[in-house]
Image 1 (cartoon, rainbow, N blue to C red):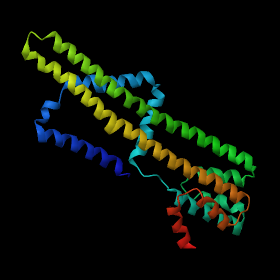
Image 2 (cartoon, one colour):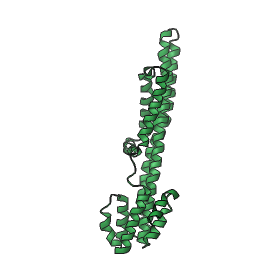
Image 3 (cartoon, helix red, strand yellow):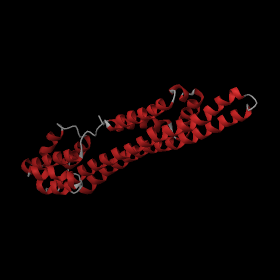
Image 4 (cartoon, rainbow, N blue to C red):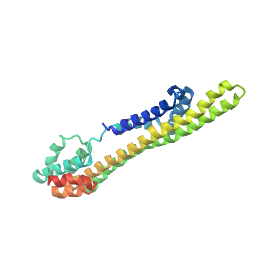
Length: 256
């Protein structure tokens, strides 16, 4: 589990609640009409903006913000180099049985294409097409959160205008001015919290997760093509190390 996402959400919520409690009563910041305008309006606008199929897919993609990737790039490199060693020793056909033992479906597909005798061009085209569609789905998920993050403050402003109209319409009754002012101010607060603590941070986290996953898939393509070309395992490792940050390369140097 990626602990930074829930940890950040919890810390942010506690800081906001804590700051309220220090200065007054928490119940003063709970207003049902404000919640309905801001949260309900944001959800409604998002439903209008995107097809339901995309929204369902986003619910699945959102889970990625709360879990660690199945394999980080360094683990993928080690796995591919292990396959290169087997291919060098026993031949590329030996990889078919070895591939059945791993959970990396993308690498399995690449190995299957290589074992079946696909040309390097075909292998690369097939795998890059799959990456392209996967990246598109990830981008759609991030775009939905970004769009919702823009809607939330806007509906906060709408709620503010509603509250101001209600307040001005009842200026002759001072006892009712407070309710209108509460709606006016709290909707803006709710919209800002939704956008800046939840929606926009989740958009950024999904983009980061997607970039990391795309890197691992690019490593697989480069590695499988090197194996297919008959490269020495050391050469395969050196090629793949170029994809990762210098700080991550030291673990491979220690193993050599």
